[in-house]
Length: 493
Image (cartoon, rainbow, N blue to C red):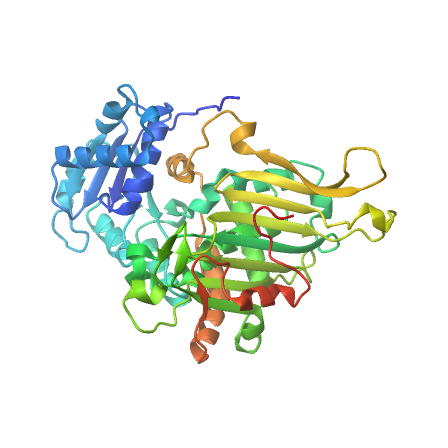
């Protein structure tokens, strides 16, 4: 099977923070792959912007090294890399200063009539100042768009302030708040599973669904991000954006179309329907943990406090919580979310567990009958499993087995699976906001998250310790098992 490549209109892309980790690991490789696929038109330009002093030639060498580090050699054969590098140029610019913007203006000329994308791969405190200076220096054209990376604020108040500062320069229709999880193939296939098939939608409700689990697990610790991470924590870093977006896509009502605002209107309704988790119920519905020294990927690893270089911290590296949606479709169905660092496996998945059959016609010799489950795996191996009960093959009576109908995207489609950033960057160029968060979505998510943060701040309890390489503190197991359920783990039914 082949994919259909649709070229985009000619554009200029200015990447602020072009010498940073995100640009090296994700943005430059994503742009190269789209260029290799023939999707970027001749004449499109990529301009690196950073305060590090570099010439064009030095930045091109920097970009080439990034491609060599993050793209397999077999994908870099021929002259494709050199052709891509010819698109690149560089501007040395300190975004906190008023000087130097004329150099960026010069690099963007000619091109006032083409699509112009400003990608802010910088720390969030620079979002407002960069937008302000882009406006003051008349670099924002009618076809300009700005891309904003997470985190967008630390709470509702700061998120509103950032949105206000961006909104003074760019209209909402030109603001692209990126969440790379929404660019993953499997996330979009969740929409296809629900709304392009007659099988699931009639049973996608509280009458047939017992509960939903969403897990985003990382084997890495905070690495070199300890300073930033200690001001954020897992709730802000993962739950407020990635995980609530996944919850929304599971829970939304069918939109009138797949158009951006039709879909985002439905996600907003879900966020506004989340039942509050506050001080009086926070202890029963949330667990926060912090990893201690242990073993990961076969080797000994330090604890969070060791990486932070501090004797104490209340910052959580693990969160488990129980969310409930107060609407007609989902009332009474718990959504269990968990995410953490230094867990046993790197995986992201959504598990929809259906209610058990009301009555079994089989005798005890057939074995136990387990509930059907739909497992949607986002990473590392994207795919979908539907767990069903079937007869164990062979003579000798009726014996039942719980087995999956398994579709691995890598096996089902003989094409390379594009990285999420490849899709999202070109969606910005196309002007398609479907996979990006709207301002009211971001603020609705913070409205639900803030009371949890407040409840934790008022509590004298510290995050519960867990050993690196385990699935978090024991309290996270108790959170779900007190409801008579268990966490789904890889390789289990």
